[in-house]
Structure formats: C-alpha cells, structure tokens
Amino acid sequence: MATVRVGLDLATNVFQAHGVDEHGAVTFKKQLKRAQVSAFFAQLPAAVVGMEDWGGAHHWARSLR
Image (cartoon, rainbow, N blue to C red; front, side, top):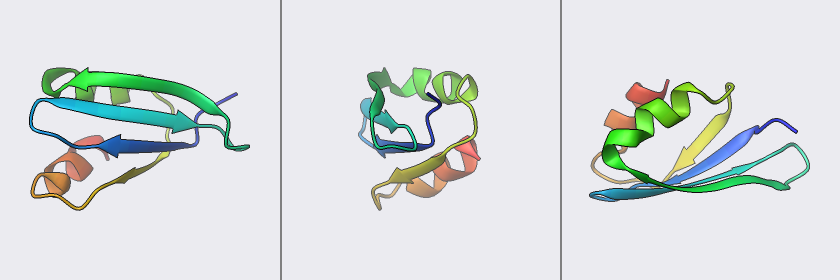
C-alpha cells in the first residue's frame, strides 16, 4: 500500500514522521534527525503532509514541496 498522508512532528533536532495509506493503516513510523528529513521525504511518493504550526514550519513546507 502506498502512503498517502504523512504527519510530521517538528522539533529542534529529532522529528517524528507517521505515514498512513488510503485506508488509514500505518505504513511507517520514523524518527528522523534534522539532517535526514529532506532525504527521507525525497524517496517517498507524493503525499499530503500535515505538520504543526511552528516557527520552522514554513521552511519545511517549502523544502518538502
């Protein structure tokens, strides 16, 4: 099953990512260091990403787009 939605919990150093498929089944739960985030998302198929409203959220939204 392909991941269609990803929740991303932003933090200073360690981020949490949680992916689900179209049925809501978990496809992954991943702890990522700041330097790993862009590379991890680059390997995923296109998906809707939801993240908290935080000072760095605009940066990450532009980066992941």
